[in-house]
Image (cartoon, rainbow over the protein chains, first blue to last red):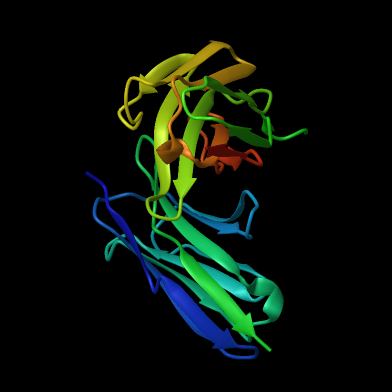
Length: 108
Length: 114
């Protein structure tokens, strides 16, 4: 059974700081997805990572995938309040298995 | 592209009543997923359809839950009879099989069972 674990579960950080969210998974896969969810809203796709060493960047967010270590990271650079949300990673075998989410709060 | 369309957006009903949630996937997507999200259990996959056929329903909590997909553009999730512990946000998502594109989620149905 595929297990996907994110850490931390909750992250409070100040604007301007950098931080990394980690996503570990238990079974070999080379398809990993990151989603963002704002309170009371749906899940929005952020990144699709399809191979070992894949790196994607969008604004202040950068995601990477290490399939050998079964690890993906979501790095936040110079955080701003608008990035406050819950971030999910999801690993795909036949279906998606989601991590528990990381709730990010960026304080002024 | 209209995206995945779910209805209703909100539903409040008394326990014991039948609840039907509806989903229209994105045109051309042949895989459809129903998820449930709660604070306690996070995001859970309930059932997965491919080409209108249920492939995996192992996440369906119990016999009170049923899902159908009579055609490529419509699916329902039914709870009968409903219980307070069924209160959650239910999401529908769709996907084009054999592509690496992400699943696209609807806006969800916020269900409250009193």
